[in-house]
Image 1: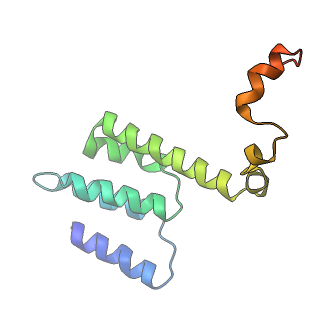
Image 2: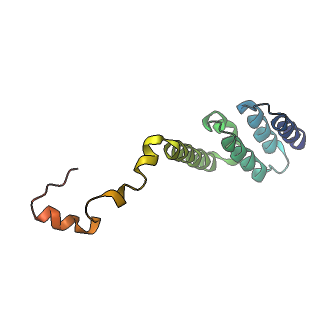
Image 3: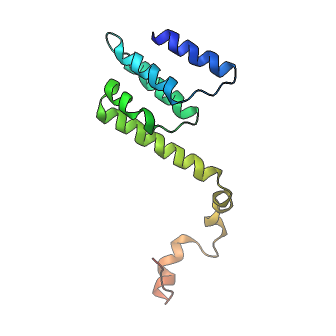
Length: 123
């Protein structure tokens, strides 16, 4: 079943059909039903879901059944971090602040001296 579902997903993607969570959840579930469970394929399916730009949370339950709660939580957490980092790096505000250290009128190493000289440090 795993090969059929994976083939269907790939065919849909080749035809520019957007694949949703249900397809990936079905693939992950099929990986868990293999004897022995195909853990590597389940993880790869989850990575494909994230690469497709889908949120990871909706498949966490089925992922937990295949990989266990700890590993599933770890993968979902990493996926959330990646999505957050991708959003921030694409933000116009972030791109204008990337080189903020180079634009400071003084070097970071001189900060303690400035604080001692009376400049207050904001928290």
